[in-house]
Each structure stands twice: as C-alpha cells, then as structure tokens.
Length: 479
Image 1 (cartoon, helix red, strand yellow):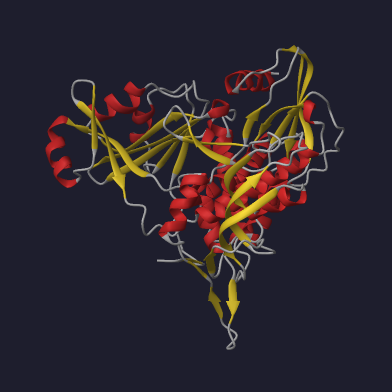
Image 2: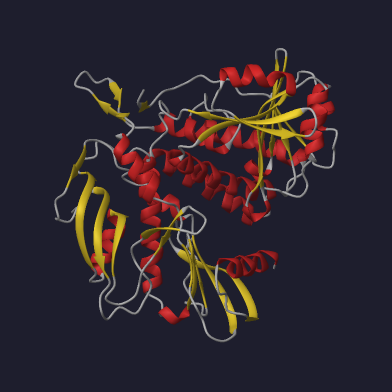
C-alpha cells in the first residue's frame, strides 16, 4: 500500500500524567475511572520508577507486558514505552519527557497536553489527535497534509508515494546516516569554546523531497536540478586545507559501518552522497567522478511543504510566548521540534521488533508462534522476548526522504564551516559547530541559520575524540 493523503477520524485516547515521585503508578492507574489508555510519567532519565515496579509487580498482578522499551537517551531523557494487557484492558506507560521534556510536573504537563491538542486541531483540522508518541503524531499530521492534484473534473486526487525498490533501500540503509560527528585535533589549551547552533536545521531542509519517477543509471554527468543519490570516486584537491566534504563508509572495530570525511590533499576515496553534498564539493573544486546515479528528475509535488510550514508557524508562536515567561509554551516549542525530527527518523526505520515479558509457562506457545523470537531469562519466573517484525508494507518506509534531509543539513553545516578558519573548528555536531572564536552571527531565529548558543569558559583541554567532546558538551549543558 502506498502512502497518500487520508483524513482519518481517530479517537483521542484518554491520557493522564503522573509525577515520577508517585511510585505506585499502576495502582493509581487502576483506581482511575474512566481508566486511562496512556499514562505519562514526568521527570528525567534518573527519576522514573524502578524496573521492579514496571515489570515484576505488574506481572505478579496478572498483567501481560506486550511491549517493553526502556532505554536511556541523550540529554538526560529516557525513551520508555510499556504496553500492559489484562483481559480486555490495555494500558501504555511512557515517559512524559518524550513529549514535553523533563521539567514540567504532572498538572502543568496535563495542561500542555490539552493546549497542544487544541493548537494542532486549529492548524491541521478538527480530527487531528495526539497519539502515543511524537513520531506517530507527526506521521498522522503529515498524512493529513500531503498535497493533492486537481483533476479536470475539479476533484482533488491524492498523490501516492510508493516505497522505493529493494536495491535502493539496501543502498541507503547501508550508506546513509544522520548527523556528522567529527572532532579535530588541536594543540594547547583552549581559552574559550563557543557552541554555534543551527536553528532547527531539519526544518530548513524539508523542501522538495524526492518523489515521482526514479531513474537509475551509470551516467557520469552531474545531476543538475535533480535530487537523489550518487556513488562516485572522489579526489581531494592537492591544495586542500580545510574540513572534508564527502563521506566515506568504513567498517569499524565494533563490526558496524561508520562514516568519515577524508580531507588529506591528493587522496582518492569512494563515496555515496546526496546531490546537495555533491553540489557543495563541486563548487569547491573537488573532482567527483560519478559511477552510478539514483535520481528523481521530475517530482510530482512537494510532499512535506504544508506540514513543515504549519509546524514552523506554530513553533514560532510558542517561542514568542516563551520569551514572555510562558513555561508551558517553552516546553511545547520543543515538542513541535520533536514532532518533526522524530517523524523524519521514522521514515528511515527498518529494523522492527516487538519487545515484551512473558511467564515461563507461556514460552512453548510463543516459540511455536514465533520461531525467530529471541528469549532471555529475567529473574526466576519472567522471560524477556524480542520478536522481529517484517517492515514490508510500511507506507512510512521512505529512507530517501530522511537521507535527503540529513544530506542537505550536512551540506549546510559544511558550507558554514568552510567560511571559518580551519584551525578554529574544534568539532562538527550534526547541526552545530564548536569553535575557538565567536563569528558574531546575529540570532535571526530563521530555521537553517546559525547563532551563538553556548559558551564554555576556559581553560578547556582540547578534545582528542568523541568521549572527550561528549564530556565538554555535558559541561556546557550544566552551565
């Protein structure tokens, strides 16, 4: 089934917010009438209930855990999604920080939830609802916003967006990635470190997502105005003295594939790049010899334009209100950002699993139904289960969209970095540059522009790798 515009009349699920220090979460939920379908626990990564509360007590009380995700995320957040079922009752518990950050207590979080729903309905229509996660909600809002073409009869007909061929899927899942994380060597202590942030970079890179007829060929000509992906042999100019511009894929010691950005003058390497990255490299005099092209020459429409514009406008409203002291609006400003970023990440997802916990006596039947399931002992009586899910048929499987957004963002980041002295750049971080001086860029607030966001006062020991840079970032966030 292809992705297309639909107008579902979905029912808003009943949701309550519970403060993290109320540890008897399930007991409170079960005593609520009407019983909620979603329970969001406030607080950060270190404030959530112990696993004994979330797993052992629930299983002892006769609940089945159909899904269990509970992992630490960066920036002090935790991704938690636990689905309980008992007879005809189904409840999902999640971290409220996934939606509104870790700082609002339950009453304010509940107020933010209602306000967000009203504002999204005003922007996207009365049938818009808040689903379990920002990614699911962002998907639903995009599906309501996809463009339609006007027929000769005057009727509006949805465009369709089929999943790309398996060979191209494999290429993107193997070579495409998200942000650029790179730290450069510096000698001597750094007096002051400046964090230069790209304002909501992905919102600036969502225009003209590839769609329509896809062509695959081995022509060596540049892509022109087409968008897509290229594989090529690349030569770094002999007089080059700045950051690398194009990615090279290599296998790391951990068995995973990684990206690096060669910048040694005269070096040859192989690269798979987006057309935005190609255009930047060509403009800087790099020799890029194309071997294979995957291009969308004539897009039928601009799939995400309406969706992006509405989210950008809504976030601008929240940002203005936040500057006036509205703490709920400040939290919702970040929520809008999550609606977009998490949806983009979901376009690229392809490894799908169902996690859960079962009783010992349920194992034989589970293995009979799911021979590929991975089972691991948890305590004396419960077993952790991971069951692979087939991603085929997922209409949201559009890694070409996510990869294009990420590639445009990397090209914008590199272009800005090229305007700075190479010796001043300490690290490139997806949509941020850490440097030894402040260029004095004005904060105009427009997505895709850069501004000074953080300062780490020295002396700062120069980072020698990712671990050192993460420690500096933690120090910057604590200020």
